[in-house]
Image (cartoon, rainbow, N blue to C red; front, side, top):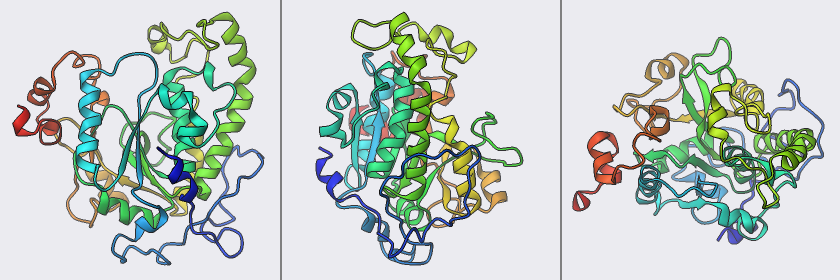
Amino acid sequence: MLLSLLLALLCTVPTSGSDFIPAHVEVEGEVEVEDEEVGSGDAPGGKGSAGDAKAGLSYFEGRPPIFILWLGEAPIPTLHKGAIESCKRLHGEDFDVQLITDTELAKSTELLGFDLHRSFRYLSPVEQADYLRSELLYHHGGYVFEADIYCLTPLLDNFDKAITQYEASGSASAWQYPPLSKEGQGLAIDNNAMGPFRPKCEFANKWRKLLHHKMAELTPRLEMCGKTHPDGKGGVDHKDEHQQQHIFRTVCGLLWGELIDFVKPAMWAFEETAYFGKNLQMCDTYGQNFNVDAFQANGYFAGAHGGPATCDFVHVGAAHLALDGKELTIAELCDHLPIIAPVACPKQEL
């Protein structure tokens, strides 16, 4: 499924070193890890500038990927099935929308194009998803969405503008959660919908290096956890972990978000030098853009062409509906959430 992409997903190779990310970009707490061979991409205004029609597609062979993550043994609830289907319906022609499950993890080298860290099996499904964001975006680029993201508007124009201006982008969030937000900034970089990324570019490589360093640091604790909380399959029993979320630690003692929050200083450092963008726009379930005022105040374009703010997606999990609505039918969900009806409930299905 992904093998053909793996052979060709490379950024434009620079003539000497990296001419995209300035050498002076420093990240607090950065560690030395063996470098990967990476591409570079061109600086804004260079090859593939935003003025070229669909120039962003030149960084990919075929359709750019949108990865949607659902990991663990639990069946996919109706709420999430509707979200996944909304992204397939809206983006299936322009993007390669792929659902990543335990099936792909079991054959990661063959199906995903990379090996998993030896301690990956000890992580919870949430932690595994955080780990995979980095690997998928590094190796293949494109987007990574959580499974409760409802896609609302076509992304191709947004993708083209973002991928030609920035090597990596994400979605902005006004939530003031300290690991995501930076003091003095009105917007945080959200984890729920990330992209577009150019494959094997400098930021993706830096994130991956930090991730592997973090995994090496956590491995002794994870291996011990595998002995004290075995699941009988070589991993860790995480089934009662939801009962511990109120203290923000997993059954192995990892902080909630520990497998992804560490990369935020790197994102901020790259953003400050205009090499990380915030182009995806998240709305609440009433269709209100979380960040319209903050986007305008910070000078970010509000939509693919700088027009009025749009809603690229709605994260229903952020609206506390992931549990309350999981037993509803798709039609009932559309009645409760009119904003998702056009993409989740075509008229012929209502």
